Amino acid sequence: MKDIIYLILLHLNLQCIAMERSEPFKLLRPFYINECRVTHVVIGRHYREKHASYMTDELVLELVESLDGKNFKPDSTSGGIEYYAADVEISVENKKNKLYRIVWLFEGNFLEIIGIINAYRVKKKRK
Image 1: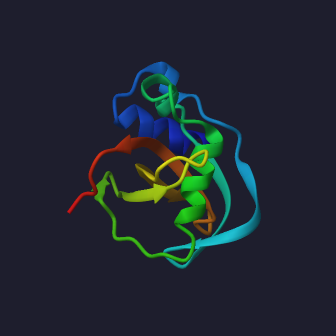
Image 2 (image 1 turned 180 degrees about the vertical axis):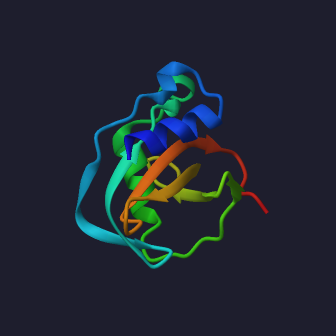
Image 3 (image 1 turned 90 degrees about the vertical axis):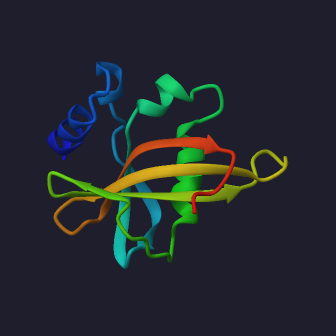
């Protein structure tokens, strides 16, 4: 699993700091994304370099939770790896709803792990 994240981030030509990742977070209950039973989340550290002023692991996990029960088409494919992206609107700290984009892939023998490549705030939803 560690090798997959390393290769993906290397493929994306991200700097060394972005190749660091969290240990997998075990979810309290499974989420179903693209009909895959997701039990763990691995968060890449790219957002910490570019979006640390407002993005946290907790917020990323909240974004992942908002994907539960939904199906997505791959946003792109590279080297046989499918990448997904979704725009998610959530309320943060009782403030006006904010729009975020989350980019991920599935990994694991049964696609039970969602690997978060990036997450950041956006102004408008993609068409």
